[in-house]
Image (cartoon, rainbow, N blue to C red):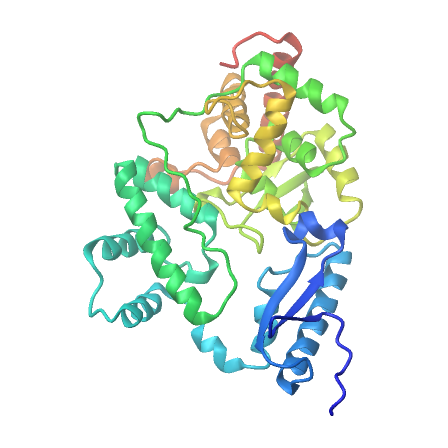
Length: 400
């Protein structure tokens, strides 16, 4: 009888073999997982195929732990990627385009063409994100698409829900064919009816006072506190901060600068969102302490790289600080507050546009203005920060 090799991470469950390896507690928040888990199918623990796959997955997770210990990010599709080294032919099933996905979907359901709802959903999603490979689509992309359908195309909540259902079904079928254990980004996306929605507002001075008081009572060492401090004086979108990489932090003309650009942790809303954001001097000290010398890898945990999870984290902190629960006052309100402060500081229009990453509103805006010098950007940030501090100190004023 052949001897079963010692492979610590494989387990037999009712005839099915599983690879299961716990992730150390200190990395749970960054990975968004408690363990790596993958079915290796039916067979004995001594089966040569199972042993080989288990060794490959063990090596891959060993390497992943080394990366995590160095503060670097690790893909959540790590196990599937590792098995591709054994079975490269499976790469053919990793559908890269929506047209390929449609072909798989039609074949699966024995159809010759998509029904009208599915066809409309595919067309409108590709119109919004024409170059995004299917399996690189994130839930934040889907939420942005939903807002675009509602605000730019004027579609009703019921219509948008039908679009989501169609793409969710297509994604599920292609994911099944590709044999990938990936979350469906079209699941769990809420669509708020315009009649019940509410525009976000800048924070009131009393809110700013409460937030600053809450931050002062903390030790300022956690990711939530650091993100809130950065949002307060940069006007950045929450995901732009939550998805920062240590390599996005640099210096220019004596200022610490955040380079807002696409990276492996998150994309950007549009091209004009890419920009440089100088930090006020006091934030430079706080961020330097938080980074503790790191120069690469995600600054914040993986759970901060997705819109829904990040919003929940930040809004929970805002409620704890005393900001009343309201769709009008969320983490995004920092951006509107900063925008108001920029206007009141008499910053030039092109400076405001450059700091906020707003798309040009005319061809003159697009081609007629020169790049704003860093010194002007830095001064505008300091002036806006001073106004926000005044609002916070008074607890009353014109921040609304």
